[in-house]
Image 1 (cartoon, rainbow, N blue to C red):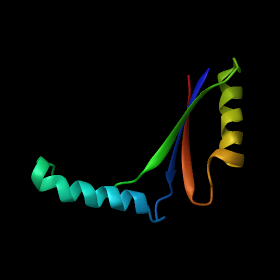
Image 2: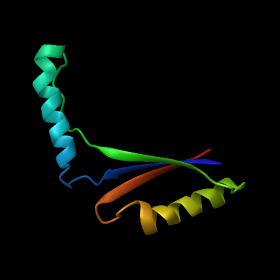
Image 3: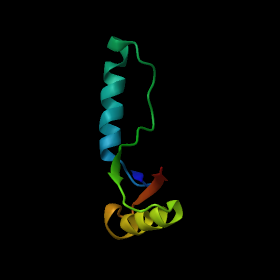
Length: 83
């Protein structure tokens, strides 16, 4: 099975990278014809294969991975996709 984990900073946590990207996009906006960009959030996506054959078991395993290692659950939230 293939697992995909999307990790983002929680709402209310300052996303410095997101602000930098937002500033750059707005700075290039007049040149490139891009409209007002706001609330940019930068995250990460992890993709990996699992040997599990049961979808529910695979989701539980990936959730445990996120809670223990992949995400800092104090400041980050995550979304899991298993296919």
